[in-house]
Image 1: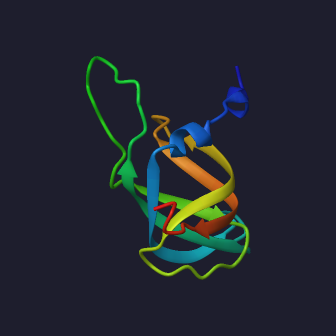
Image 2: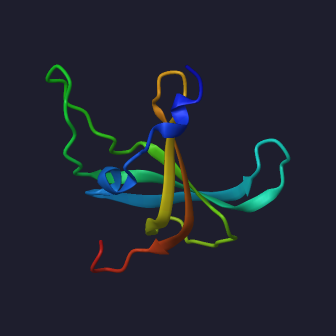
Image 3: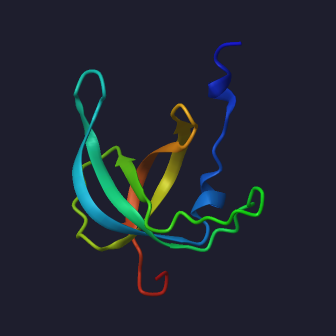
Length: 116
């Protein structure tokens, strides 16, 4: 069967629960084929991961310190090491082993001290 991938939904809210994202860099977000400017790519690490994962065969894991990029459809200037949270996220899984995550969002907000 073809086209099955378009029916898979990634639950961003459940994935992001218990996580803190820290900015490590900014770059231009471009269309892969045309190279047209689309906005800003905000590179982060997952600094905290308290997500309750379901472990397979008793093997525990975490995504702490993994890299993640947020593709924002506007130009942004966010200070390095800011704690951020993406808004209006559309995320999709890709890759041969279904272990890559593409994250597009409308905006990114810097966490306030209460959210830290």
